[in-house]
Length: 243
Image (cartoon, rainbow, N blue to C red; front, side):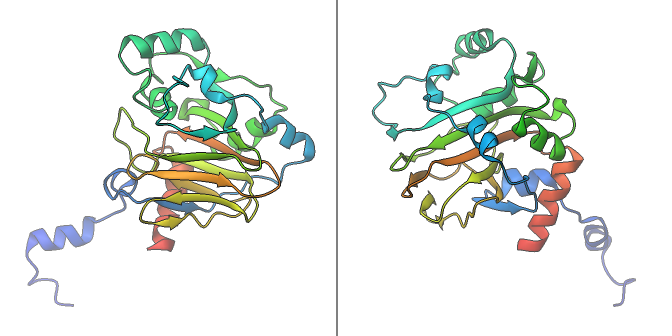
């Protein structure tokens, strides 16, 4: 290639072009990206730790009378988050964000102004697995589980974020049979298999879930700083391999 005849703007663009994590996650509006990350297979005791029979929205004080948000059996637990949860909800409510933005977004938004910590001890399966991929707690905003019993579902909906994120949620299919569906409008169903870890965009497109199996479906949801090296490198590797 004859380099000396290339205009400087083009030469600089060619030599300085690199992968930008914000472009990949925020600006492209990709629906999902499968990451090369694995959790260790959970034991029966580990499953019990993550399986919840309590509607997670009660803790977050979502308005359950809002019929536009149809769900059946959508339960969950928090493993890492704001230490003073009532104060967190009060601060969020005072800023008008109580029902208009999703829980991941609010936890990202207040991460540097409120105290956050683990709700479980060091022996927790979830804590051990998350710490393997995100060693520094300062890079974690929220870790929780979502479970759906057989026949459980969540109607099509779109989440909203304070920071207008695209790809943001690290979604771990801890227990996921072939009869589980995660659909995303215009993009088909996510090709998730048990044990997979996906980065998903729950803000741009309507999406829905349904458990058509005879077993509980359990996922671990992680909101984290995507600029931390351990996650950023995985996102870039996955983007390069996919595209």
